[in-house]
Image 1 (tube, rainbow, N blue to C red):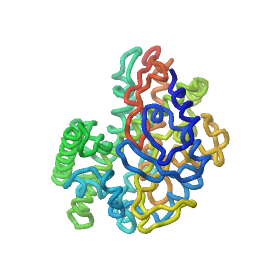
Image 2: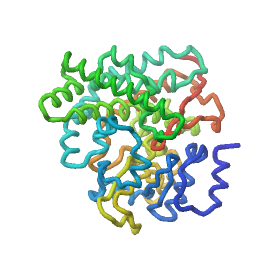
Image 3: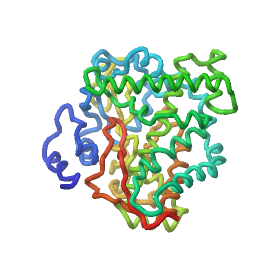
Image 4: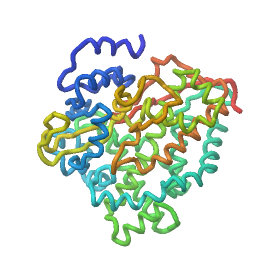
Length: 420
């Protein structure tokens, strides 16, 4: 049975209200459902596995407008009691201490906080770091088996983005080595009655203790780096302690896991289109444009985080109550045939390619230049140094992550002829 077969049965059914965004078939391939939703209208009420109901925006023009709609704010304070009962699940005091980062801020505070990170992720600085990032990628490939099989998540994709991030933000090596990737799972909803709640809270407390250790270390060993600059800003009263901790939280979690997942979705797309893989391997100059198309074709940031109206409002003809969550489907927007010709095709020559994989507007991902460089280096290195690279399991046996907002696989077993 392929991953598409269960969805074929779903396609024959009319859309329900709310539309459930649940189940393995949906996570393996959400695009048939998104197509039906786009055809039915730009805004739909949806149901997440946690029980949260939200309003999902699916078309390109509607998504672009919503991402730039200054009526929609990001602060959790805007959420109503209905939303808070299901979605605001991080316990106190951690919620107040770790959830006031950029993704949950509105102007003018968002503008103020974002100013502290833009220089570290500026395109010019990222270009200056390319040779170092290449060294990090090569070191990971050097550690892979001399010939396949290998798991490219465990052997490469889970480590490369974090090593890059540590380099860019100034996380010292001894602390970087002790970062537990499982801490990143605290952004995945685990309700108060879920059997996994104790493990969730343990991870959360472990991450918070780690952040406190990072702050202490950078205060005692200040340098010319992003983390040191954030600590100085806190000590000079330009940031609160909660804002400092939340921004480090966001850097450590949002700064690496999406790139890990995007490496997997990009490779899977290429494995499904071996002619395109061969072309990209043989023509490295195509890589920058190819990465843009791979980002559009299957984005690791499938859905945005919450947005809220502060009063009952209308969104593309649909009434939205104040405090209900509005979420934009970046993946659905990026496959909209009204904006992209033959949107389900992987076309490495697509130009222009105004995809929304990094969002748009004031919340456009500040790390976009870094993510692009990481993807170009990661894919280029793997294709160049692992000739014959191919998926080592059946496509339908891929294990897709269960994270609500993201796409990626937990493992990526591959084969290759040899390691160059």
